[in-house]
Amino acid sequence: MVKILREQLIRKLSQGRFISGQLLADELAVSRAAISKHIKVLNDMGLDIFSVKGKGYRLANPITLLDEQQLSHKLLQLKCDNRVDVHTIIDSTNSYLMRRLPNNVLNGQACIAEYQSAGRGRRGKQWQSPFGSHLYLSLYWQLNQGLSAAMGLSLAVGIAVSEVLANDYAMDVQLKWPNDIYYQGRKLAGILIELDAQSEDSAHSVIGLGLNVHMPKHSAEEIDQPWADLTQALGEGVDRNILAAKLIAGIMNKLELHQQFGLAPMVTDWRKRDFFYNKPVRLITGSKEVRGTCQGINNKGALLMDVDGITQPFYGGEISLRGA
Ligand code: BTN
Image (tube, rainbow, N blue to C red):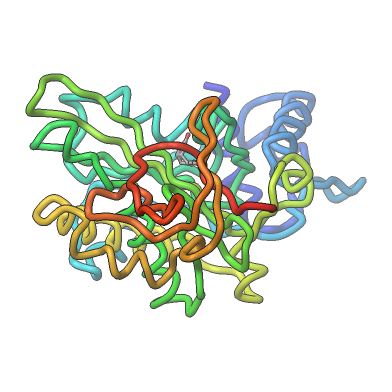
């Protein structure tokens, strides 16, 4: 109930015009005090709504909301017929699809939201998800050959995202093993893949992508690492419906390639945008630290590191530049 009411309120405000508290109260059949309370919650979610005495409430900047029809239409133009569930408010788009496993979700089904109340990043971190500011996108992908088919999956998705940004938005982005997309040395997007294995030969993956589109000031203060966003990088805003459709199409394309041939046909694509290639790095796995020089990735998505003159594969851990 509350969720529906807030969604209606957002829709009414999205045009960017002043609307009086009384009119909102009448149209949504609640009291003015209730409207004022909901506006406060929406402000806490990241929407920049201000009020002027005698005029009412207004969004500081008009917002183009995510739209299921527009998105699906664009996807069809890109020859994709994925089902896309668009949500205004959700806990986490990844959790939404995970809850539907295994029978209530179609292969390639996507979920996208304006706001996540419990957005998740890697290593149990929270993923800041202010309202209408970024892209929070998840996609379900069935792994017919079981869990082993997940090997290198996040790298294939990273390559897909980097190619969309390069080809459609002329952005020169870098890939940071194994899950991040960087722009000019700052994090632009992250990928979180969650797996669910029912049996040895059947497994499910939910691929989550968080991509910064327009970072609000108050969220920026909560992020503990250098970040980039598309609006700053491009010097103009982007249509998130079109961006999302292009990303889904691009990711589907690489997922199909990965399903057929594994990561092998994409290793040179990774190399072109490898942030760490030939740089001195350290890899931390639990309490262990290995130092070496990054030599790219192998066909399975492992990080290749030259350690004391011998190139070795590493399958997990957190990599960072030495000295950084
Ligand atoms: C990272 O830590 O870099 C990965 C971030 C992944 C965030 C995305 S946003 C959409 C999807 N839903 C979530 O709860 N997390 C992922």
